[in-house]
Image (cartoon, rainbow over all chains, first blue to last red; front, side, top):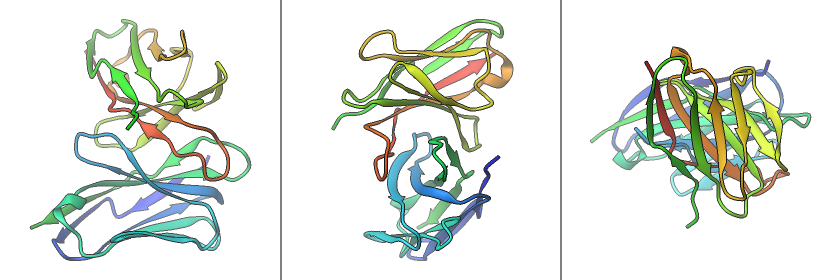
Amino acid sequence: GQQVMQIPQYQHVQEGEDFTTYCNSSTTLSNIQWYKQRPGGHPVFLIQLVKSGEVKKQKRLTFQFGEAKKNSSLHITATQTTDVGTYFCAGHRSGGSYIPTFGRGTSLIVHP
Amino acid sequence: EPEVTQTPSHQVTQMGQEVILRCVPISNHLYFYWYRQILGQKVEFLVSFYNNEISEKSEIFDDQFSVERPDGSNFTLKIRSTKLEDSAMYFCASAPRLGRGEETQYFGPGTRLLVL
């Protein structure tokens, strides 16, 4: 079945440093979504990428979707303590299924 | 801002007992989902529901699980005979529609289920 690998599992950064998490799918995706989950909270939708090579920005967050639509990344510039949480990608497989496959998430710890 | 609500927030049950987890999706949404997240692990899809029937389900969603939309607002997940390994956070989610760019899902706060 479809697998979505996400690395790294954990990332410690000093406040102000940059952070990147990567997702790789075993199959071509129709789209990919990114979620943030604060400790003890629920996943909150951040963004969806649909087009090959798409790049979207939200303030300090930059999201990319690979040309082959099999990988994606989330980059945070100049992290802040409010960025702490686990960032999940979730991919929908091409071909009509709407079952999302989540990556296992990258937990970001920001040290002040 | 509209949000998905779930009750109860916590549920403790004995192995073999039946539990019903309840969700109230956002009112104009058409697609409903249940996910689970075992402590410290990734979110796993269980089932999607549209037009009063299951659209898709995962391997986890076996005969012990069922979903229902008993009225116009509630969406329930029933586990018939709970097992220890059913202990997890269960999230309900809803989406306005499916289609290019419209798959955004809004998650509820979750029900933490503990099976003893």
